[in-house]
Amino acid sequence: MKRLTLWMIALAALPAGTLFAQDITGTWQGSLQVPTGDLRLVIKISPVDNQSLTAIIYFIDRQGGHPITPIAITQQGATIKITVASIKEGYEGKLSTDGNSLAGIWTEGAESFPLNLARATAATAWPIPIPSEFKARRAELMKRFPDGIVLLHARANLLQVGSFGAFREDPSFYYFFGDGDYTNSILALDGTSRQTWLFVPTKLSGPAGWWPRPGPGADSAAHWGIEHVSLWEEFVPWIERRLASNPPPVLYVDDTFDWWGKRGVGRDIPESNPPGLDPIVDAQLLWRLALERRWPNAKLKSASDAIEEMRSVKSPAEIERMRAAGKATVGAWLRGSIAVGNGDNPSQVQTELVRGCIDNGAQSPSFWPEVRKSLGGKLLALDMGCDLDHYQTDTCRMVPASGHFSPEQKEAWEFYVAAYRAGLAAIHDGARRVEVFDAMRREADRRKGQLQSELARKLAVAILDRKSAANGWLVHSQGLVDAEAEPDILRAGMIVAFEPTTSAGPGQRFNIEDVTSPKTDMKFWRRCPTMPQRSRNRCGR
Image (cartoon, rainbow, N blue to C red; front, side, top):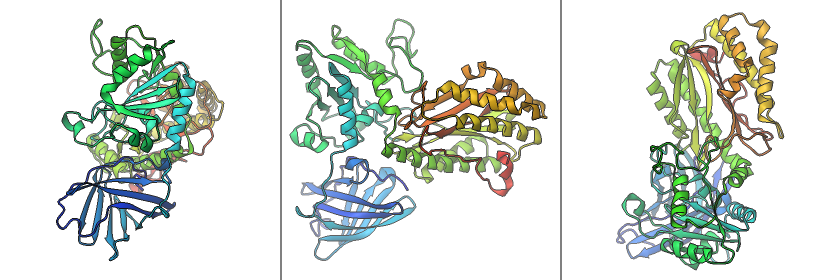
């Protein structure tokens, strides 16, 4: 099932004429009947003027009722159509003669679910909760920084490199506020007053200005469950007033790059310009530099460690998202492996992997899929993942280009999988990352005497070489980014990927990656996936 949580909504403009044969403005509600149970849905439709409508949709049983995504509304006679084009969702219903109910179908890609809506009155309307999870995260972050203000900048561009045509909010901004049209907005979490401010631009040039955005004022603040929504232009004067207080607050930023590698804050990282010049990439670093330039005497510190610690342990709702993203990833990987067996070239395989993500309910791949050659192209590593509702996963398996493992390849791969599984089994609450590596080595050492082929024996030597871990063995967390942090100690609630890359010699690299949790039953792959008959032994089973 595709995306079932919808954020902020706007957009629907059509001529009045036949459009408003019956007035459909107001609040509508009903339960979407899906296999996992009923999901309560609320649609609020209101007029912008006499020729256009605006609407907000809430799935109040998911993510606390936070809204999402622009929609379009059309009416032809008694037929009402609601379209969420960006994620291929929509609703079509028939309006009753009294105008108080709609009977219809909610469609998500190839799936359809019954949805009957009724006009809500003040007495019958379901309460729409303030998104409690986001609110609780903001409160916790402000508690951790009582001496200052955490300043988080929303994505500054409508499209980003690697977004595959879909807008993805800055991960930390999303983590504390949710999804919506917040392009260029600034979230200020004031630990000194325990209040939240959102500074929003009302007009932006180019594509970013095409979409309506939340306006300033008390109504917007109440809608989003925060204390203040102010104009973008008021941000600088507000900071200057706060810095004039005694003592002045510390300004905290999230300035760690979206990869597990910790980096210091400096103008030579990332290396996008020669020494002595400011960087031209990495929005987080540029945001910090902008604040430093404007207020050189202010005390500026990083909040990244605290944010990373909070993001690393997932809530039940996040784990559910990761499960869904993992399910899509498995389906997409299988599709790519079948393409290999069909003789497709690497570019065609990548296309099938991307298509597999979309067809399995994700919005896009987490990154552009990699098809890496080993053993002179006889083995291919399919490294890919899917992005679903902002949460990303990835996985990697080796497949034979011919569709069949040779006896030597089969022995080496099965040996590698057995050693890997021992490492995977060592992932538990409180385990250290090095313990996972040691478990994989111990199993390899136990099995090495049984190996017959030269390739498998060389692979065993490489696994037992402790330099291998330093040269490409990883245990990293996943979530809003497919590779977040690389924790030294694993904790319950973390979603982690174990990803050892080992070279048995030049051009003989072996890759495998699975995703699991130190406590939650989260493994994507119980065993190598079953393949069609032609390539069933691709996993060496």
